Amino acid sequence: MELYIIRHGECVENTNLLTLLGVEEIKNLANILKKEGPFDVIYSSSYRQAIDSAKLIERSTKTGLIIDKRLDERYISDELKNDKEIYLNVNYEIKGKIESISSHYERVSFFMDELKQKYSGEKIIIVAHMGTTQMLLYYVLGIPIEKISSIAFSIPMGGLIKIKDSTVLSPEGWTVFI
Image 1 (cartoon, helix red, strand yellow):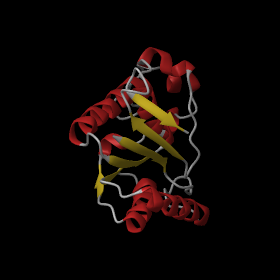
Image 2 (tube, rainbow, N blue to C red; image 1 turned 90 degrees about the vertical axis):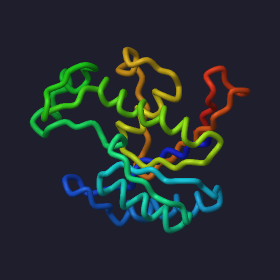
Image 3 (tube, one colour; image 1 turned 90 degrees about the horizontal axis):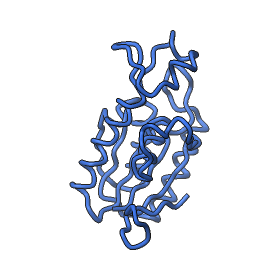
């Protein structure tokens, strides 16, 4: 399986609307992906900025789109966003106020387990958010939940990471192209 993990284009904070730059970023990326295709499916988070980004890619690549809430960003209420101690605590969770990092990781892991079973040998595009793209990479690289607070990946808005399943090239079964 080949994964193309994309962080949505630049958006206006608190509205989730893509900016003109965000639309341009994704259109440019869609042109690159058009040459990489064909693709079997596009998966997107249910948040507007991800869906809008995925739809631009869908139009360019002529690939079907599936919206999956398991790709949504980790939920954190506005009142807790600036509390670094709570934010970075792997297991800290308050129903309706903050989703734990471990819960976010588990949700993304279930998604990936299902994807591996359904799409062996196929080319998949995933459009999500910074936190979710990080969880996808932790999963693929086999980084345990206890270690993720000490290892950070940053994918720019409109950024792409290509990952190829390869039991020959890597003992963990994945090769990452950045």
